[in-house]
Length: 269
Image 1 (cartoon, rainbow, N blue to C red):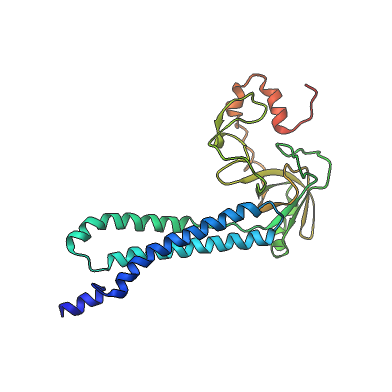
Image 2: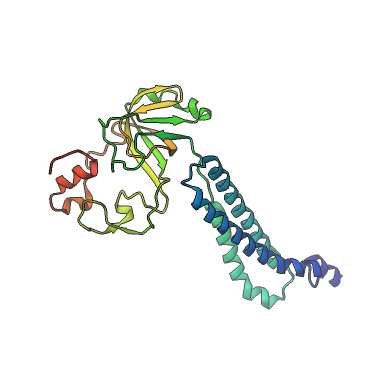
């Protein structure tokens, strides 16, 4: 009876012992492939290979999810390997912590779907903020499968455009120095810097007209070909806060002049 219970738990089973050795190797080996894939993804993101980039991103996401399942399997194998009571007491807390970490990472793993693309006249330089009366052709082209989601949007005057800032090349830092501030340093979350942990941009623009799956807008502050992640209507009172302030900008010398730069308003001084 004792031998039968031990065999059920995999004690001294050569197959189980080999699996214990293999699974950590699989995890490490898969992580190497993921790092290689991510390296090549960064190399081709700005090469115009939209479909290739999308599929590679999906592959990386799938590989990470698969590896997390192997990590969970490895933890479960250790839990059920028939360890001696004293070994279980020593490793139990560590295993629970590791399992909790893997589960948390699994929950945080998510992807974003591109719903369209922005068309603008900007290919090399763009304003820091949308300019209402900017000249040029500004459009949000929504993918056909999402076109039905534009129903009744034309009844609003303004909208939020949420997009992926795909041409960021600068190294990320938690401390930044915004342009036109003379070297003032602030935290990235206290700024509008495009170089962020998640390169997500947000602009408010006026809706001129909607034709089929295209939204014609006022000036946008983004490069042509920028991927769109979401569109939301800007609603009066709900989105306008009358007691909003200028934060650290209020302490800047000649902050009114600085605001002209931030807004992208042409001026002579």
